[in-house]
Image 1 (cartoon, rainbow, N blue to C red):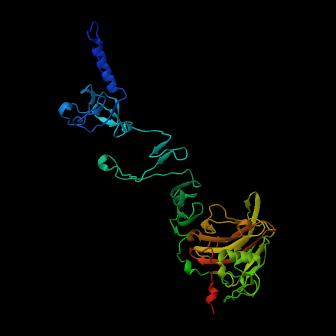
Image 2 (image 1 turned 120 degrees about the horizontal axis):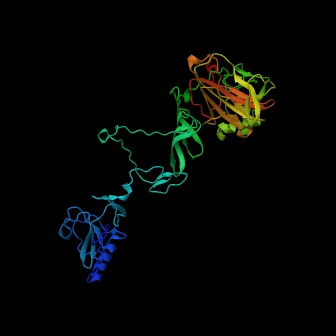
Image 3 (image 1 turned 90 degrees about the vertical axis):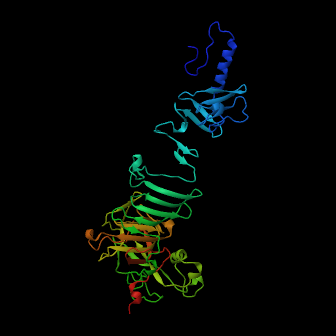
Length: 450
């Protein structure tokens, strides 16, 4: 054997004359192969003015001095060309493309395409660096996903499967602007499909929800029917009797459609007075709690005049007839509810509630969705002192075939003994109706009765 088995470097033979020639030939070959980097792989004819040391991968259909050397390495040495036949597994960097290639035995192929599979890769970044928070990261302007066709051995379909651990987890598509959330689509904290939006990335509002069981669609933030809402409550939620049809309201009257329970007591919690002293009028001063509510729901120029109404002051009694709701280790019992009676399959309830002493719990039933200040509440809704007046909206939708037609009630407030709270402007509408958090009084049917 006169050459090495892998690189075909010539051996210096015993008693060989001019050994330096053989040695230098081997060095030239090593100089061409070691740290192999070529300037180009697209030339099929030699460049016009090559310099010693330049190397090229000879392109297909080569002519001239490179003829019949397609795919070989052409290296410029001492004013001439030497040619090296690549062996399987050789690596070569193409400088003008910044591409690393390897020789398969028949062609040069990108080294990145060499692995047949990538399994259990902890981090993968495309155009950017992945990290522990985002182990799969991509920074690009367009992305294309195409189905594997039947002609290619596929089904022609393309389906993404995304899975979360359980109902309380989140599975969503989050859309951001300058890294601040603006829209989210998915299963957010439950298994119902929802679309929600945000103006600042922290406060979110549901604009569409789809019940996973019934398939029914709710549009909690739409204007659907909002301008047509008429309360079914005969006193328009003004706590001034059913005969209060003008903007003026008489003495406090607690309505029969509300039931104070477990010994809870009821009193006048203050009245909104039109042309009130607080905002430049002369008809009387507002109770501070009523003023707080008006400040919440009306612009400054619209706080002096309006439809008069009372708030009801509820003080929780000592009764324990209902099953308690435990909050922070403390038991709360049923204090106030909408009186049982015939009900519609779908209803919307709205009221303002203000806790004066301790937390008030609003306990939802199956089929009910509760919004506090316009935001859907995923856990048991609680009104605390720091909330001030909270706008509560309840979407109550029941399956008629699985209903007693009088229960559940869309209003159930729980409190601790002795704790006081206010409720104002209750309204009950048939169907699921969007209610603006600043709506105030919603006119009842008595408004138009003779």
